[in-house]
Length: 288
Length: 272
Image (cartoon, rainbow over all chains, first blue to last red; front, side, top):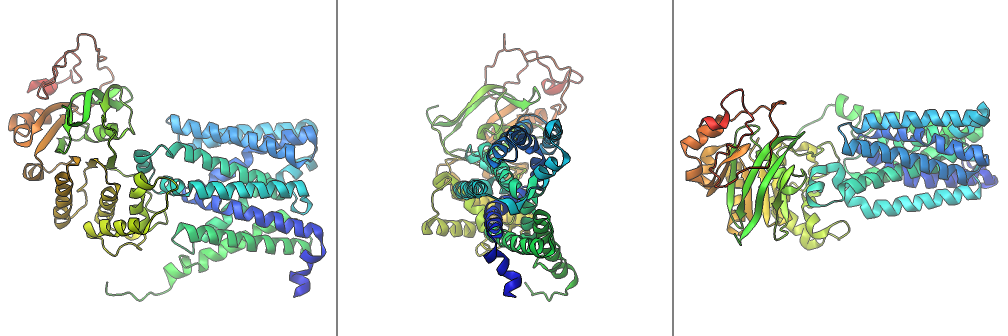
């Protein structure tokens, strides 16, 4: 048991770093994912994950596989797409789904083009799928900073974010926070996706954001416990995924996300608000 | 005019260059209780949105001279009922004007939330998830939120929709309490019997103001007839409303016949 569960993390530095990096990512990304889901923007996260590709690719093209330039590039590309799509949806008749799709497709095409300018398909695979087992100290520092920023921002804007999700018109009638908080939130999404792509790749970093959140929805009816539970599910997925990847010699990113996927599927069935409880079990009911 | 809490000057509100409220002039006195009456599409809700500021005027201004706090209960709330929140979370949003983004909710605040829920007959509903409330219960919860906002100006847009008769009575009592506390209250409402019984003043809208003043005067049959005759549709070929030579004498009864006839296919409001 010890050999199977604990030993890999004790004996190998790269496993420790991978564990630390992915756990820190969970702390920041999972609550952001909860709000993405509650705002019915789950697919926005996916779109944003594609959108950061050209920035990361440009950094990669100029400096090679280096975390800092790729991250900064990803941040810039993500910010442009988030602001562009957000602005179009706030100030024109077009809704956010359409504007987001348009912007991210443009961005994705640009990214693939940039990678193909120099790189081989191996390079593209690096950017798309990442490698959690090669997190260096720079990457860990970056992830720690991103997680800290995310938690601080969430703590400050929590009330506005909840109000904006629950009753946006009310928020607009009592304060001017509505539009800023929307953009701040999109900023957090970009930040956490960028933080995740070194470890999980641009395509899968959104998985650690959405799957634990989607799973947590089946267990609770309040926001705060939902965020906490999402983080816990994220933790469990990271540990399980890394162990799976170590013992079965599988790529770590997909293993982590697939572990989260298993939790999600189980939650659909067995969650307190899942299929089993709400559909099949016969409930006794009270008189009032 | 010194005690006007809201002043409209030539206020025109609308969508896509078509006016929904056209050249409204006048003042809402502080502490008055006004019913806003009119047919569908006559601009009642639009006026509310204009006062709150979620809709910018196309022309003219709506002055909130003293910077009074406004509480607004919209007709179509953008409330997301599937959001995982409890009644107490929803009602506590009403503390925003006092506590803002970061202020801690005190024990006193929580007691006030309970009191507000009690006042709308939802005592003990604090822990209920909002997706288990009936339509009328939700409406009462939103009333509790307005109560908590403690605003000088209160705007209610068709607040009695989907509310049973007993609850309408309770809510009217609440509105009268606000009136007694010298708050300025405007209520969009369709039930003219309720208006006649409970509202001292009435604004009758049909895109333009048809009449505005004491309820008995405003709801005279000839005014109601004129309001009913108004043409609800927009016409893309309606002429532009030119300010030059405009003559808004602005007694609210003024029937506003200065050239921009929105309803040139039939006789429109002027027919009265």
